[in-house]
Amino acid sequence: MAALSSRAPAPRALFSRVLVLCVTEARPAVLAVSAMRYLTGVALALPAATAAASFPRVAQGAVAWVLSILAIYLYNGVTDVTEDRINGSGRPIARGDLEARTAAAVAAGAGGLALLATWGLPSQLFWIVAANLGLGYLYSGPPAPLKDSSGGTVAVLCLSGLLSYLAGFTVATQGGDVAPPAALVLFAAVAIGWMVFVGMPAKDLSDIAGDAAAGRRTLGVLLGERLSRQVMVGAAVVLLTGFAVTVSLTQVRLAGVVLALAAGVVAVALAALPAAARPGAGGRRRTRRAYEAFMGTQHLLHVAAFLSWI
Image (tube, rainbow, N blue to C red; front, side, top):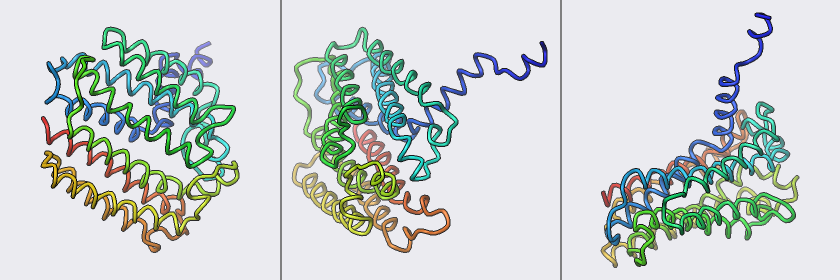
């Protein structure tokens, strides 16, 4: 009996292990930047808010939002397992450490908890979170997942990005009828542009083989690796130029964000150089460098925006 109990993991240990694997599958960096988008929506909304939201309410809204993102990315991992294995992904479902059925159950639970967590907050937040969960299903789920096409992916990224800032804005303004400040509108536009025009091609670079095998028409599959890199760097430069000029003309307090974006453009351009991206030993790791530069810049942009207004 003692031997049996020593082999079988305790329920608490098993639950903790599954939870860690699910968070790993959903990508901690993605969950972190999702929380930062929400909090930036709060911070940039405060100048226009009738009254600052209390910390507990802001934290409760953050929990609701991050749980919805956890649910979405877990479900995406369940539906992406075939192409993830072709691409050599090291995430838990692809490597066999987390059963797809278990991940799907946790995703459903996280989605339900996300909706419950909006209780007592402005009623609009419930519908914002529900809409985000709906977008997540449409992106990954049958019968026609939007992730299979570049247009569908762009639409989901834009809408989900807008909802993240809207969620923070809604909590900060207590759901009041308040127009969003110019700083929030401008920052949301550049952050979503960075996500769509730089992040999407950067992510596709390491997944071209698996995406093609799954019949997906992503930018990387349609254009090929070399042209995708050129499009990504060109879009980054155009985005930086347009944002810097707009901030200068409008005198919005986002100069720190301009500097952070400039640093990110340089990092992405360097990561996209053929020498940095050349396949070989650790080929997937090399092709992920542009995505890592994009993701690091995302975090930096939101930190800069948040610090500009606290």
